[in-house]
Length: 241
Ligand SMILES: NC(=O)C1=CN([C@@H]2O[C@H](COP(=O)(O)OP(=O)(O)OC[C@H]3O[C@@H](n4cnc5c(N)ncnc54)[C@H](O)[C@@H]3O)[C@@H](O)[C@H]2O)[C@@H](O)CC1
Ligand SMILES: [K+]
Image 1 (cartoon, rainbow, N blue to C red):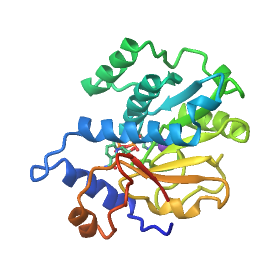
Image 2 (cartoon, rainbow, N blue to C red):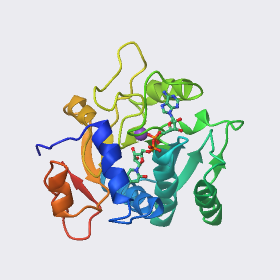
Image 3 (cartoon, rainbow, N blue to C red):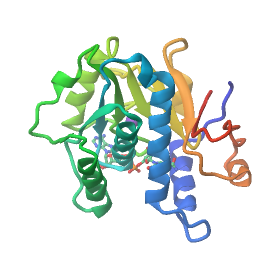
């Protein structure tokens, strides 16, 4: 399906408006729907019934893209997968992220920190897929540590264990795509949230299945930002593009 995109700058403006005084969504609401849509994309692409081992590694970054990953992990657990979260840099400034971690504890989902070993979760067939929730539309290259090393580990295994990127393949320039001279993720799935960003035009044909998710804008709001509303079927939270 052909799709319109919006720039990193416009995506940030769209986000602010959704959470502004006129519309009044909270970040928590949007993140819940975003994380749920990523979990649903995983379920559609890697249906639980065909796997004996159901481990999924979710790598969560320090911002809201990471928050989407934490929510996604909780839904994956509820769907019957066995998620493990690697969350090396936690923000203590926003209490909400700690609440998301406590909810993961509640469902028995392990959350690894910077001192924990995580690379043994990068093996096939034990791990169904890896959810890349490291950076989204606020990423500005070049990447600082420890995330450069983490992405390099993911690149090493990405032909054996599929990567599901949340909103942006981590490390890609949001408007420009893969950054020359750096290790570049080639995800098997991309879940664009609200509307694809320009880097989605740089996905390799035949390699990446592209979904849109984050079903939370009205038709008139979409048109105001220059795109058509997406025809999500029935109760689905994602649409394959
Ligand atoms: N309307 C939407 O589409 C929604 C989007 N959400 C998510 O929010 C994301 C955007 O969240 P944020 O604005 O918090 O940003 P990100 O999560 O993309 O990244 C912000 C964090 O990355 C760090 N960072 C940026 N560049 C870096 C670099 N070069 N090296 C190391 N660290 C770097 C920043 O210090 C900050 O901690 C979206 O991509 C999406 O996943 C949802 O949570 C809510 C609704
Ligand atoms: K990402």
